[in-house]
Image 1 (tube, protein in one colour):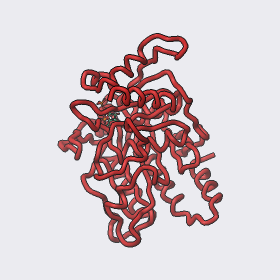
Image 2 (cartoon, rainbow, N blue to C red; image 1 turned 180 degrees about the vertical axis):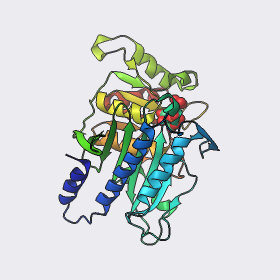
Image 3 (cartoon, rainbow, N blue to C red; image 1 turned 90 degrees about the vertical axis):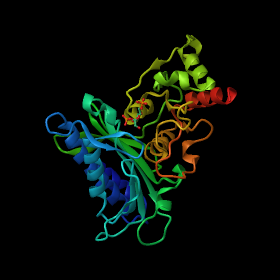
Image 4 (cartoon, protein in one colour; image 1 turned 30 degrees about the vertical axis):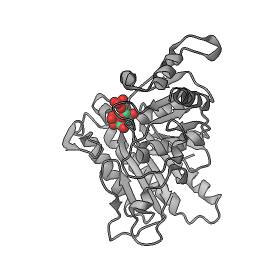
Length: 329
Ligand code: FDP
C-alpha cells in the first residue's frame, strides 16, 4: 500500500472531497523525498555545517535547514492547495507567489528539526501542521496561521532515521509509511498506531534540572525511584531531536517533555511548528499532550514563533506529571 494509494482511498471515503487536500499531501510526500535524498548524501556533498545566519529563535542555521526550507516551500507553492505558509526558519508568513493560485489550506512547517544533530549523523526530521484558512479570499494572512492546535485538519512528520518514515493523521488515526528507496515510494508500515497507556521511558534534557520547578524535579526523582508495582525506575532516552524523541514515545509509550524553567519559563520548543503537530499526532494515537495544565491543542497562539512548555506521551504518564506540577505550584 503506497502512501499515494492510501491518500486516494481515504479521499474516496469523503464524497464531497475536491482532491485539494490529497494534492497537498502528495506534494508534501514529494518534498519529503527531496529532503531525504539530500540528507542521505550528507557528508558526500557539501551540505553539512552552518551558514552565517541565525533564525528568529536565535539558533544557528545549518545548510541543510536552508535546503529543506526552500525545498518544502517550492514543492508546495504552486499546487493551488495552499494560501499561505509559515516556516520555523522565517520571521514572517510566506506568501504564495503571485503567478500561482491560492488554495484553502494553510501550511506551517519545521523544515529540519534537530539541527544540532545533523553533523553527527543522528536522526533528524521535518514536521508539518495543516489548517483550513479562516480568511475568505485572496492571499492568506497571519490570522490564517494563528489558529489553535485543535483546529488542525492534519499534521505529521517525516523522520530521517535508520529508515525514513512519513507519519501523519487527518483526525482518523495515525499511520506511518516507510520509504523504500529502491522504488522511491513510501509504503504503509505502521497502520493505526496506538500509544500504550503507560510507558517506562522518560525523555527530556535533564541537564536543565537545577532550573526546573520543584514539581518537575520531584516528578523526575519519582520516576527514578525503584518500585515494582509502578514499574519504576524508568529508563532515560534523549536524542535531542524532538521528532525522534516523540516518535519513540509514540511507539513505546512513556513521556517526552521540554518543560519551562527559571531561565526560560516557556521552554524551548515552538507551539506552531513543533508542539501543535506532535500533540495532534499523540492525541490521535490515544495519548495525551499538555502545556503543564491543559492540552497543547487548547493553547491560543498569539505569535508565529511563540514557545510553550510541552509534555507528550502515554495518558497515565502525562497525567501524573501534571499532578506533580500542580501539587508543587
Ligand atoms: P535543535 O535545537 O537541535 O534544532 O527545537 C529544536 C530542538 O533541536 C528539538 O528538536 C529538540 O527536542 C530540542 O531542540 C533540543 O534542545 P536541547 O539541546 O536544549 O535539549
